[in-house]
Amino acid sequence: AILFFLVCSGALFLHKVNETDRQNYSTMLLRASFPLLVLLASGANAYSVNSRNSRRGLKPMELVSEGSPTFDPSSSSSSESNQRRNVLASLTIASSAAIATALSSKIPVISDSENSIFPSIPFAEESLMTSTSSSTIWLSSPSPVDEAIALIESSCDRRFLHGVVASDYHLMYRGMTPEEARAPSIRSEHSDLLLPSTYDSSDASNFFTSLDKRMEEQPVKPSNGHLATTSPDAAKTWGGEAVSIWPLGDNVHFAWLEEGDEFWTQEQQQQDVKSMKIIVDGIDCGRMSLEDALESNNKEIMFRADQFLTVPMSLEKQLVQGLRDAFII
Image (cartoon, rainbow, N blue to C red):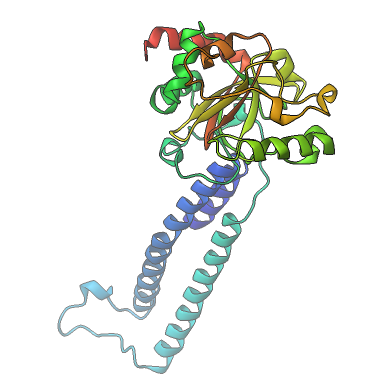
């Protein structure tokens, strides 16, 4: 009965969490099931022997004293009973292993963050420097803004954070679908600027490929970077909702145009990448700084980051006020 409840409740919970939570909790459930199986098997074996002895008028095994009648395990009936118990135990273990394997496989995810039954992942911050594949970790604690502020304070690129504060909290944004923008999240994504499908244009793909060759010696380039914009309205054209971007970790770099705002538009199909004036990281004295770029009305900023935090615009005022109060710089 305990095992049945554990499996059913585990399956119910795992259907309600996102992919990353599901993997973590299914692993925990898998590890917890084996000690329980050993306990149940031991209890079943002791109960079976004591029940048989009771029916034969014998005392429980642990209470048998000297001179009392004892049960001979070498008897024919005992041997057959032991075989049956061994078969039953084997079937129990095999069935439980199959259930655990099923729980570890892919499970459809219900994407309603308001119905989340688990808190945020406590080890999300530890994985910031190790993730190399596309992934999403949702900040689903009761106070996601406070969690976002703590993450920004501990892991956001300090140069970017200084530029945000110096520009009086002008931010950069990306466009996401309403589903992706439903809550703050930590994301790790592959760059898609070289793919024709990104702009639905082979000309755009060729342009960024040429730009990538020109910037091959730079730490940030189209093959490892993402584009953000200082205009929330422009960001919305890419997904319907705008989210602010906060690069995390140490391997963070930025690039933007000294003249012009967007790297590529339909009108710039014939633009020569060799003539573009590109500023990388804003370290050249006298040229446009990151702070200046953030203060622009509609400037694209290419950034490189192993992971970045996204915060929906619906939480932006609360986030900015929290940052102002935190005095983290």
